[in-house]
Amino acid sequence: MDPGIDPEMDTAAASPGADDSGSAAGPGAPRAGRRGGSQRKRRQRSFWRELPILVAVALLLAVIIKTYAIQAFYIPSGSMENTLEINDRVLVNKIVYHLRDIHRGDIVVFNGDGSWDPGLPVPVSGNIFQQFADGFSSMFGFGHPGDILIKRVIGIPGDHVACCDAQGRVTVNGVPLNEQSYLYPGSAPSLSRFDIVVRPGRLWVMGDNRFFSDDSRDHQGDPGGGTIPESAVIGRAFIIIWPPSRWRILPIPSTFTQPALNGSAAAAPPAVGAQSAAGAAVLSARAEPTGQAVPLTLGFAGAVPLTWLQRRVRRRVATRRRPR
Image (cartoon, rainbow, N blue to C red):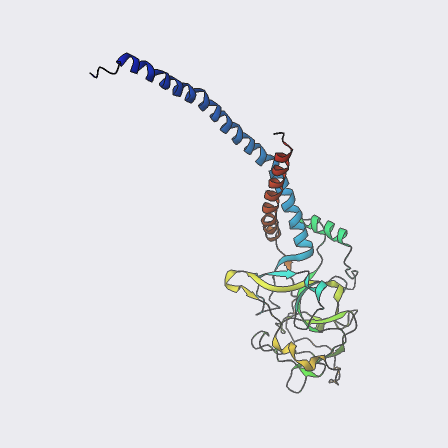
C-alpha cells in the first residue's frame, strides 16, 4: 500500500460526496415527478375546457360556410344527364353572383317556389341575419328548404330565345347553339317549340336531358312565361365532388361564348305553342341538400387553427402578466 495515502482518510473524503449526490437526487426526483404530473393534469383540464369552444367555433363556421359560401347538393333525378347523373354530389358557389352576373351556360340551383308553382310566393333573400337564422335552423333539420331545382341557363334578361331553326337548333338572339357537347346522347335540342323574349330579372332555363326535363318549355303558361326570377337562384354548381370517378369541373360550354350572342335580338320563328314529347314523362331536375358533413368538415378544419391561435395568444398574455 502506498504510504502516502491514508485509506481511512480516502474513505472519509469519498463518503460525503456520495451522500451529497444521493441527497440531491432523492428529494429532487419527487419534485420533478410532481411537476410533470401537475403539468399533464393542467393540459388535460385545458383540453376539456377548450373542447366546447372548438365545437362552437366549428359549428359557427359551418353555418357561415353553408349559408353564404358553399353548399353541397345531390342529384336525385336524371333530367340533367349526362352532365349530372343520379346520386352525383355537386358543390354550389353562393358567392359568385354577388361578384358577377349570371351567365348563359351556367348550371344554377334555384328555388322553384313561386316561379313554377304559382300557389307559392316568389322566394326573396332576407337580410344576412335572417339568412343566418335559416341556415342555422336547417343544420338541425328545421325550416322549409323549398322546391330546389337545378338547370342550365339558356337565356338571360333581354335575350330572344326560340326553337327551332331549320336544323332543329335552339337559337338565342338569332344565333344557333351547338349543344351536342352537353346534351344527353341522341337527345334533340327540343321537341316543343317556343319563342320568348326574357324579361328583366328573369332567366330561361332548360335541362340537358331534353326528352325528360321539366323546364321552362313546360311552364310557359305559368307566371313569367316559363322563366324563373333571378332572385330565386341560390348559386352556381361548379364541381362534381362525388363519386370520385365522376369528379370534374362544370365549365360553361363554348357555344355560349359566341360574341354574336350579345348582339341585338334577331327575328325568330313564330311560336306554335309548347308541345311535350308524346308519352314522355318529364322530370324536374331537383337538387336535394346533402347532409351536414361538408360544412361541418370545413368548419372543424377552420376551427382547429383558430382555437390553437387563441390558445397561444392567451398563454402569451398570461406569461407577460405573471410577476417575475
